[in-house]
Length: 475
Ligand code: SAM
Ligand code: SF4
Image (tube, rainbow, N blue to C red; front, side):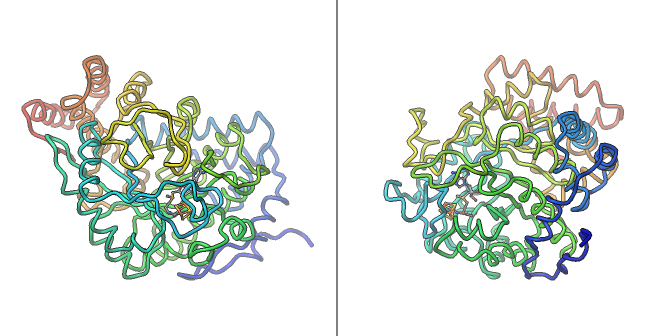
């Protein structure tokens, strides 16, 4: 039978599973695109058009090294054209590692008796946040195992606690969450606590593989997890992050499934994911996975570039799971957010632990142990603007990445000035002298590039206000 991609397509019904394994496998196995077709698809994406599943499959199946290079070049171009040279910085804060699930790749899984279990007390959370603020952090993602202790009330409580901690000029202005799926009521509670993004990664969209790696606990239910962000959307929590854990199954399948998930959210809720994450399996205490599908560095770079082209409006998050070398390379393919100064061991920010990592205390191994300032320094050397901006979220401008992407001039009048203001705050309050000098040079250079004299004048006035001691100025 001739391959007809349309015949398998599932209808997009809210809260209904929307992944058709056969449909995705057909795309992977039956598409042998010509060079012309691949170039046509790259061009479409670089011209700021969202790609269909079929078009994404064209990129996934382009194996010629010359075409792979063109895909990466396309992602670089799109990133420069749409997002400019800003990178948003954040830090993860692990609140508790008790877990009732048994994900075979995770050091926190219930059957791992070597894991040292801990939930931070409120006092410890405050100390951790003070230490993060002392470093200059403004944006956090709170991370939890899946356990009855970490219910919606507890998550909402920790979010409010995080917002309440102020030290010196330090404060947390945006709290995102990475935790288990909640009930409808639960999503409503955490939304009301003022969270930014709620991230839930499907880990693998391939159901047989999913079932093998999630043998017990609530997370064993593939469909419940798959439709969890539908429940969030139904409760008005429209700022959601999706992701796949690369290395469990064929990366090409996961990329197409992430695009399928995006299609589903767009079709049912008229809003795509705020962010897409692409964690890659790292070593963990008692890691128990097959190595058949581990993703090479080359394929990792490729899949990030393909995701950038396929969903040009979404934020893309690259974490310290990856080494500084890999991060410095793939950041140019359209990554918009990275973490800095990351520590996964519970309580380690305030204890200023710098000793060798102990896998029994962490979820997985961190490969980029640069401090936040070291990362900022390197971004500046690379002519990028490190940003702690939280303006859209606080002004109720939801869909910020979509606005950056679709509203002409949004980057020039909002994002770049806000990035500069938050960088200036960091410099005034936390940066050592050499970083400060470098940062002011980057700020001056970006001011010179501003073509709207009114905007430039307004920004210069605000920079002066920051020097005079005001804080938290944004557009
Ligand atoms: N417990 C919640 C859950 O599973 O959804 C919260 C998330 S978990 C603490 C954060 C994410 O880390 C997981 O969703 C998974 O993708 C990732 N992860 C788990 N083990 C990992 C490993 N060995 N290497 C890299 N990432 C891993
Ligand atoms: Fe628990 Fe999440 Fe780890 Fe699975 S990935 S064992 S749910 S902490």
